[in-house]
Amino acid sequence: MLLPDLLKQKPDRHIREMIIGQLLIDYGFLARDTIGESRCGRPIDLLSIGNRRQQVLFTAGFHGMEWLTTLLMLRFVDDLCFAVMTGKSLCGVRVGAFLNRRGLAVVPCVNPDGIEIQIHGADSAENYRNIVLQVCGGDTVHWQANAAGVDINHNFSAGWESLHKQEQEAGITKPAPTRYGGEYPESEPESRTIASYCRTGNITHALAFHSQGEEIYWQYGNYREPEAFRMAKMLAYASSYRMNDPVGLAVGGGFKDWFVEKFRRPAFTVEIGKGENPLPLDMLDDIYTRLREMLVLAVVL
Image 1 (cartoon, rainbow, N blue to C red):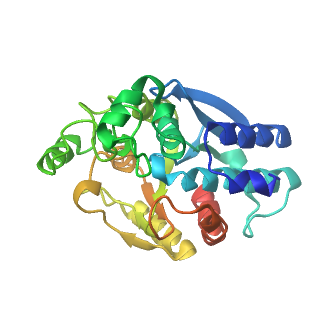
Image 2 (cartoon, one colour):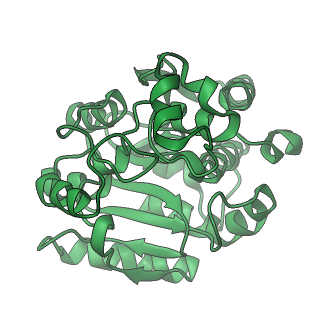
């Protein structure tokens, strides 16, 4: 099991490396792959447990201020692997048998540059430092985008043109700390990495973790599949989160939207916690305790 102190620090690249390194030492069956790189060349890691021919996909760390989702994923991977290793149940479920049939793939940090910039400032953007300074004046407390000022969750193709028009109407016409969807869909290496993995793998359903609001988004446009609705109800019940529909600039361009439109399979956005981003570290315990059953359920559904 992970040392508690590791999960009480903001997950910059150094802390993520320490956590993932410890997980790999503790659990020999856990696999790590670098499936892509960010604008600044930081690795985008994927952790796999169980059957890799068919998987559920968990993604987190899309936005700079939402780094608590990264810690949430790493803590769950630790709990899940410990249950597999010891043969114990997790939330009453013997997860090992399920993972042999269908595995779990976790991308704990989709946007490593954005999280680094939010935690450590503009210098973390390296060759993109001047862009960051230009668009935020050096104040990166509210930074959500990648190093090029593109919001990764506005950079997928589903509804991108409509969203892009809304961005322009809102005055977002160039790189920005948040909500700028880029020059075209998948213009960014981070969004291309996630999309490519989904295209080449056999993903039965996907979850994208964001903060905040204690809500679950489950549909996109006219895609309201009965199976997705059934699963969303179960996830909402297990977490006491509310099923809801996004509005305004939160509609379209996102990973969940793209996955639903592309594959006609269930995908969910889970907005963890309540408060103002970035959610504080001391909220992790309560959020994880509340969501653990839902996370297990999402693996075995």
